Length: 309
Image (cartoon, rainbow, N blue to C red; front, top):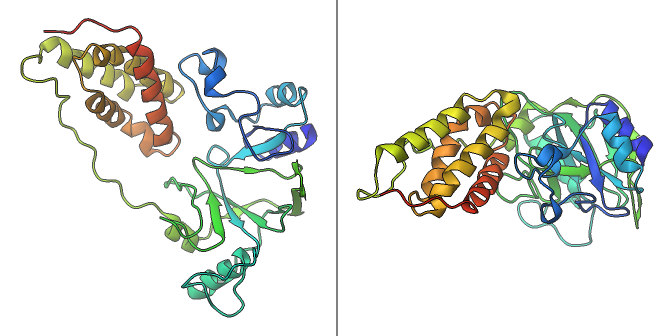
């Protein structure tokens, strides 16, 4: 497992431990036992942010137990197309076509529909159940999210994708049904443009820029200045400090939320707007920003300030 984890990291893929013999996380660190130290000094961070390519950290983790290996696809710059196997059930419309029984068939139908070859010339792994993982380089300038089947932005029955916010089990990992293994060992190809278009998220509605509402009887220069100052700290944060700055701002304003001077929803919206520059570049997922704000508000709420008249 250590060798396989180091091999994945050598390819630039960010790994983290999964529980031995399973596809589940966390193996070592969860929110319920977070010590607020190390990477979590400014608030608990999950597996996606803790995933690493650092050989020292990897050796330290996998020396403790034969953990399976998770690859955080977002930080790794990957989009992985997961083609599931035939489970014996009939495909639903519109996939109930002659010869369509599994994810590989559905991908072939999609490729034919778009007048493109089936994109199989890339790094490929086989799963213990007989499924296939096709690894692709993520496109620049757009943050693709994970999908499941044909739900939401999903592209088809029995076809899942793993991108930002998702992970997959790496080759070398072992579960009860067998091992994940490499079947085509080459550099991941760029995600085909037609798949990028299918997976591209719908445009987000513009964020509200309305001022934080504190009620006419409570509005004060102090509150307005506090919100404006904390948002400026977030907006001006360097990339390496964006999460810490957002957490600190949420902690500070969380004290006022707990005291009843500010509304939690308004503060969350203001901080998300302030973090918009970082989110827009695709390297800082909105899901992480929201989690950091929630954590900071909760921490600040434990140090409740007096209400401001």
